[in-house]
Length: 456
Image 1 (cartoon, rainbow, N blue to C red):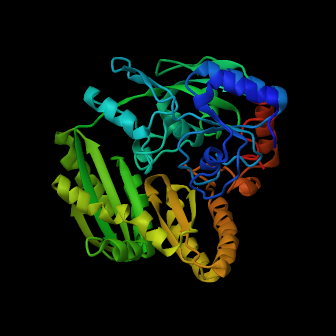
Image 2 (cartoon, helix red, strand yellow):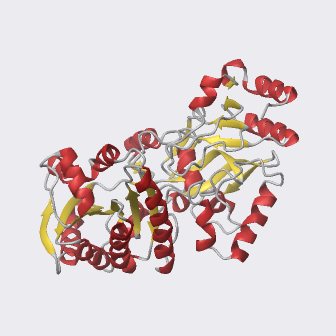
Image 3 (cartoon, rainbow, N blue to C red):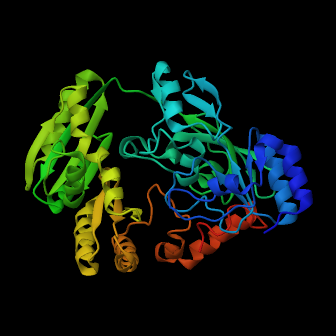
C-alpha cells in the first residue's frame, strides 16, 4: 500500500530523517525474520523513546495503517513479518539499560537491549536474568518478552513471564500505560504484565521492562548421559524431574541429531541412541550431593555412559554436540521446519516414540532435541527437495495432533506467529479463542498491531 502523505510527514517529524526510511533496500532488510518468510513494509522507523511510539501508533490508527514491532528478527515463526505492509518500528536503537538495582533485585531496560549485553552488565553485581535463548548474543529483551522466549534455564528458573515485574507499553489506541510493580509481590488488579508477554506485539508495543533478577550461583556442574535409545533417555528425564534436585538445564538430543552433529563436528561428538545434557548449580558445598541425586535418577535401563565434567574445558567438550546441531542441520536442509512443542514431562517417552513413527510414515528426516526438563522439545523436519517439503507439512500437522493428544501445547518459547496460526483451534476451544479476540479488541480496537499473527 502507499502511505498517505500526511502520515509520512508525521513519521519524518516524529523520528527525523535519519530514523525514518521508505527506501526499498532498507525496507527489504526489515521484511523478513529467521522463519525465512518475507513481506515488504511500506516504511521503517527507528524508535528512541516512548513518546515516539505513542505518536506513531496514534498516527497509524488515524489512517488504519499496520504497525509491526521488531527486535532483531531472530524469531522462527514469522511473527515480525509485515504481511499486510504498513510501518515496521525497529527498537534496536532503544537499547539502554536504565537502572540496575541489586538491593531490590530488579533492572529496568529498554526493549532493544540484547540479552547477552544485559547478562554481561549484571555479572559484576552478582546477578543474572534467567531467560537465556540460544540466540542470546543477538536477540533483544523486547523480542524475548514478545514471544516469551526462554531457553535451557527455564526448567529451574522460569520463563520471561516469571522473571518480569512490570512493563511500560503503548496500546493500539495510541495510549501509553504502565502495568506490574517494582516489588516481587503484587495483587492489584488484572495481571497485564503476564498477558502482554507472549502476545507477539498484537496487543501493545513494549517500551520499557522491569526485570526480576536472580543471584548468580557460584558453582555449576555438567553431566552427560548416553543411552541405548530415545525411549530410555525420555524415561530418564521423567525420573530426574521426579526427584527433589531441580537441574538448571536438562537437554535431550536424539540419535539422528547426534549423527548429524558428529558428521559436522567430528569425533568430539559421541554417537549413541540418545543423549542427555544435565547441569546443576548452587553453592560449591551443595553440588556433590546434587550431582549424586541427579546421577542416581539418570541411571536406569538403557544407560550406557555417565560422565561428570571436572573442569571448564571438560564442560565445553561435553556441550560440543549441542553446539554443533544448528550448523549441521543447515547443511542438510536450508528449508528446515523448526518447531517447538511441549508435553507433560511424563509423556515425553510417548512423544519421542510418536515422532519417530511419524518420521518413518512420511519418509521425512526429523531431528529432535531440546529442553526436556520442561517437556519442551524442538522438532526439526529436514526436507531436502520439493516432494519432501510437501510430505513434511503433512507430517507437521500430525506432530501437532500428537502433541495435543498428549495434553501438550503448540509452543513453549518460539510463539505462534504466522507458522502455527492455523493450528490454534487444535489447542484452544472456540470459547477461549473468542475471549482472546475480545482482549485483542480491547487493546487494539482497529486491529493495526501486527495483523495476521497469533489468532486464527
